[in-house]
Amino acid sequence: VTIVSSTDTRVRNRRGEGARLRDDIVAAAGEILEAAGNPEAVTLRAIARRVGISAPSIYGHFADREAIVDAVVAGGFAALTRAVESAIAGSDDPAERLRLGCGAYLRFGDEHPQVYQAMFACNGTIATDRAPIAVAAGAEAFGVLVEGIRDAAARGRSTSTDPYLDGVATWVALHGMSTLMANLPGFAWPDRDVLLGHLVERLTRLR
Amino acid sequence: VTIVSSTDTRVRNRRGEGARLRDDIVAAAGEILEAAGNPEAVTLRAIARRVGISAPSIYGHFADREAIVDAVVAGGFAALTRAVESAIAGSDDPAERLRLGCGAYLRFGDEHPQVYQAMFACNGTIATDRAPIAVAAGAEAFGVLVEGIRDAAARGRSTSTDPYLDGVATWVALHGMSTLMANLPGFAWPDRDVLLGHLVERLTRLR
DNA sequence: TGTACATCAGTGAACGCGCGTTCACTGATGTAC
DNA sequence: TGTACATCAGTGAACGCGCGTTCACTGATGTAC
Image (cartoon, rainbow over all chains, first blue to last red; front, side, top):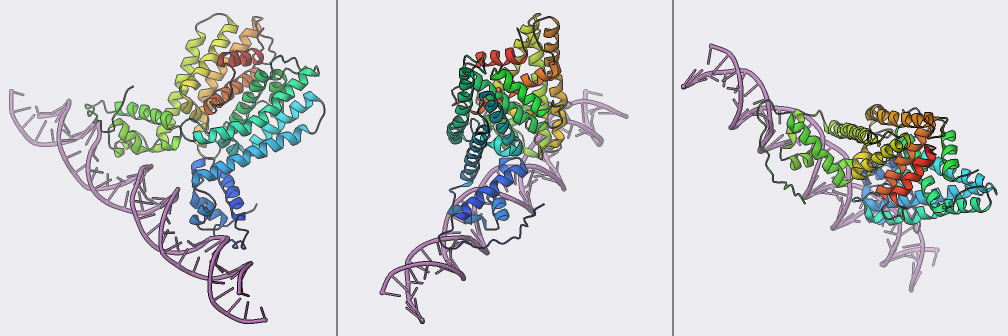
């Protein structure tokens, strides 16, 4: 167990290296979000306490509080895309690549449930500005999924005749599985891998 | 458009009817949640402004702020169960009943996206106390789904051999579809009913 | 090699705000006699 | 029928808190000469 005391004093960055604080701020924000389970807990003061700086120092790197959460979300999308792409690189078989990719997607949600939630919680009123970020970044990972289904169909491993529709279906199912399992740990869930395999198989129409 | 001015003054309840304020408080909390899109916006003062009372009056009916949100969530579960049950009463055909029930579930999510989100957002740290409520109340609606699949299978309308697993699969897919469509309106969604029909058909194994 | 100086990476105190919650209270409304 | 009184349904002022943000500042670090 690593305990970061709140009385920690950080050594000041050397000249020219001030930008490193930016990364520390984003990392701290992500940790606070993950620990508190709610984006409102990611306050400038909480971040400052965790990093070991004073709150106003943050303004050298971010315009306001919201910009920090946006950076956490952007980092989450980058990490998710990386995870999925490195997972599917593990096989040449199109059906297996679909399974690996979806498994990696779900694993990301398991490991960073609050960041994952924040990534897709740019709902209506609150952060309409962030929706385009999510759409653009998520579109990349989503495109990989659709291409995977198309490829599997072309090579006779899937009976899909509408890869886009099947891709959306698979994605919403994965999303629902990830968020519900995180939020309702008390429910009598079937085995994670059985459920995942079931969804992927039926929705990407593997055979 | 109905505009409820914040300078509205409420007529005081007559003696013995004080409990009516309780319902007004829960209704106002639900409206604020739905309008603001985030549970932190449901403050005692915002509720008081909307109802036309002073903030301390709320303490006659609720122990604290959290209890109000809990009441909204409980009301949401009751309404969801009612909606699903009244929808499936519209047909005797087991496959059609599944479609109708899932359609009603999704419609509830469409019409009350923030309440729906709050119902299932009793994540880890924040409101562990609320998880049992969700599990118990949701279990009722979920049981209806599993029974529906079992019934359809018994009458030859579904090829399901594991109604529980298929029920979970259907549920997580509906949940994912509901929350993602609400949160990412900018995405190029397929037609709502096509996607819904697709998910229900494949996951409950209709034939 | 020494020194004045610009710049960088932050700090500390303070502001105004809305919040949950408490406290003592008020005034209308029913009820007992 | 009248009246004293208990009760009910709230109110108004105040508290302490943590927050985002601003402002003028400080002191170490590198650079020009």
